[in-house]
Length: 285
Image (tube, rainbow, N blue to C red):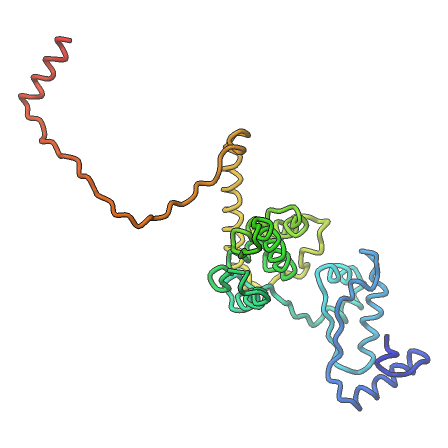
């Protein structure tokens, strides 16, 4: 790995020496590493990853590496001396909150690929869209792709647009199944504040999250969960036959024709004599 950086072969010491000289000569200010969780195929192996990360610091350059949750769990299983070197200076990258400008800008950039088709408002629809993907960028792209497929399958003339109803259908589709499982777990963990599945270390940060992230995002997640719960209760309350026959009620549109309001006549209140007469008539019956 150091050979391309140093431009030389030989022992590790020779490569480090050459790489250090070349870095200072070329003005390299930072050494950045990412995707190291793929360095080994095993979910438990961590020795090779640790050795490689430590060796990157030998070049004498400021070194930063990006670690997802899976990699953090592996590094936490290392001895204290390795953890002290690799986990002593951390910066937690938090997901975008539903109401943030960063999230709406991200959504705007995604739908800018085809703005004439994606009729989604980056500002007003951003919180609802966030509920369907939990702010996960890859899942957000998957929603748009699946929403496009659903909208296109519903037309015969090739004219269609994608709106939030298609995004909701995309979330419930079988092609979004893998993402939906992850999103449900993330939602539960954020609401409960703990890991809900010990087998899914890839979805749980073992060193916690910034306190500033929790309140707003947790409330959004709770609203999405309550909305889904309400829909499931309504569905469970209907019989199988009703699910097959009942269709969503379409909104009626105004035709432009004028209408007339007919007032019902208001009758005068009966007096005491009338009430006595009616009571006597009932007794005679």
